[in-house]
Amino acid sequence: MRYSHEKWIKIFQDKKYFRDLIKKAFEKIGLKVESIENTFPGTHAVFVINGKYVIKIYWELFLEDFFVEEEILRSLNKNIYSGKLENFYYLIFEYTPGVPLRQLYKKGTKISKKIIKDLAFDIKRVHQIDLKRLKRINSRNWESYFETKKENLLKKIEQYDFLSDKLKTYLMLVFSNLRPEKYKEIRLIHADLTEDHILIDDFNNYKGIIDFGDSMIAPVEYEWVALYLSGLNKNYKYFQYFLSCYGINSFSKDNFIVFLFLHKFSDDILKEIIGEGYIKNYNELKSFLFNYKNEE
Image (cartoon, rainbow, N blue to C red; front, side):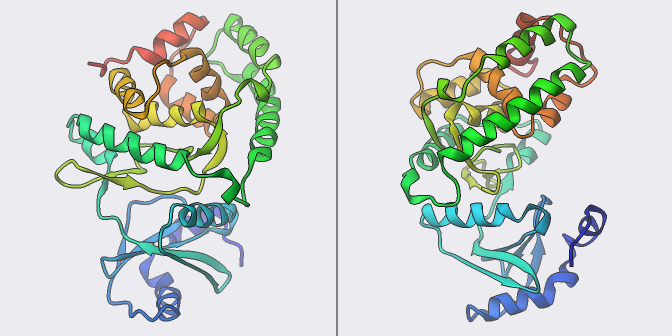
């Protein structure tokens, strides 16, 4: 049975709907289900079991997320169980207690430097995974993604009514001449380091990153788009501190803008950050991206 978007939205957080499937999955690994709790909503059906485990049940519309996430979690030496029941693929892994950074930002609380430092070390650990250990994704995926995204982007730039004709012309020229080999340092990246995928505890300690379903092999610069604009709440000073902890001494704002437009979720990101605004030229775009009012 295939689930439409409307149907999935109705059931993906429904504990009763998935209860029998969850019990069967845990019976397979010799565990009894005593409690099922919801987590923060995302794309797939995710539940906390017994306060110790997470089961992630994948919507078949984005089934590739399952195979990618399974491979990456194993590469990170996580203890996981995977399987298929009632046409649903699922992963079971240890629960990391914590709340998304979104909760901290909602309270108006500042992120600590310790969180940023621990986050930098953890992300670097992901980036250092030996690519030879990965089978589901590889460097060819980046080249294929780049060419497809570039082709689509060149068609869509003209439709961006929040950009002036002058800026559209400039961006068309930039991307027309862009080649994937320009960015040679490719790594495994998380690719969606938003405020929802970075966890902290009630004492504002860093707990970990979650949801590797959108991970890919790509230039490391791709990683910084979601991290800066969402994960670090558009605070450029915090972002600079992150980069120093990570071990990067120089940062190209021009490269950032390239990967902003090449990002998988570029349309949503641009719509969110620009909103009803209007950008006249490239320098104004750069200023807009790196001079937010919440910067300290």
